[in-house]
Image 1 (tube, rainbow, N blue to C red):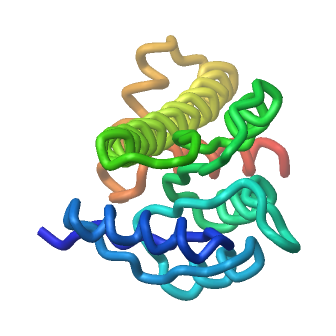
Image 2: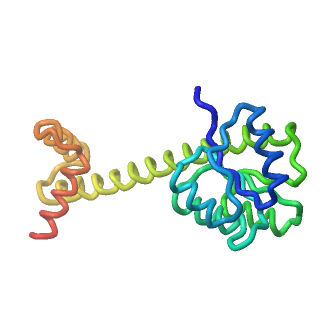
Length: 192
């Protein structure tokens, strides 16, 4: 299994070297180390890493704004590093969608669980989003099919069950998804 590829954004060289050493000891690959938010956004776009660790206070664009831009463009798990444990910053990081928040100095025993949980929670969230999308799509398809059934019932004097069976049969006979057939019926109804 390939090691996680990480973009590390930390403007203080000594801290960055320490975190990089910890990450390497833990078996992770630091794909890039950058010094500000703009570089972090660019490197994430360019390298497509598995995770980003962003310092909250950096020159130019801060870590929260970088996280916001990264998550809007290409969602990945993000851990925010900070010397401050202010509730407002934690709340803002949470609102943006940051996966974890670590207060410096970062210790090896803190970093591994943060990374593990960030990646796991991020994957769970992605799975839930996909499931919600699938459910929304299924619900929309169901609504279209119900409307088409209503048209068939009204136009051809069929019962609900007969209209549904007719849609199923036509769908099979034409090798067309039922929702596509239902959309065609509704379009034809609009024209008439």
